[in-house]
Amino acid sequence: MSDVCQSCGACCASFRVSFYWAETDAHPLGSVPSHLTRKINETYVCMQGTEQVPVRCIALQGEVGQSVGCQIYDLRSSTCREFDAGSDICNQARQKIGLAPIVAD
Ligand code: SF4
Ligand code: SF4
Image (tube, rainbow, N blue to C red; front, top):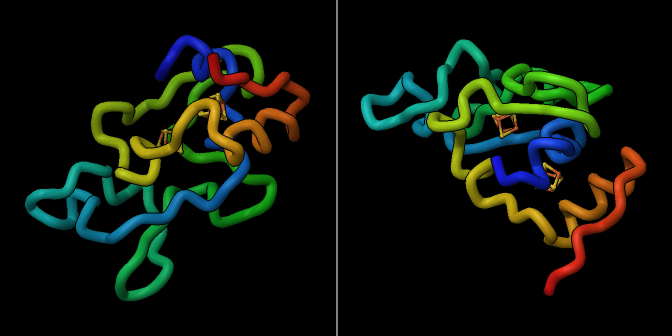
């Protein structure tokens, strides 16, 4: 996680984090531990805890808005890898927990 993310974690506690099932270790080339996921349908799974309200990914450690970490950082899905700090959706999540937006340079 980037420095700014280590004191945030809002996205991991805001959205359903879904991805193609073959990104899990149920597939020989997948990485995400499948026991931390939930089946959505024949094609997609999501991180456990992100399919419910309040949302909180099972792999998120620490306190949102204070100090957080991802327990499966090196194994996380493309959905997590491609989530950009400073994007509109990131700033929406930050706003929900009372953090200031990240402003691009
Ligand atoms: S909401 Fe943005 S700043 Fe916060 S952890 Fe996610 S990507 Fe990082
Ligand atoms: S797997 Fe890690 S980066 Fe992805 S939502 Fe969960 S805690 Fe966040």
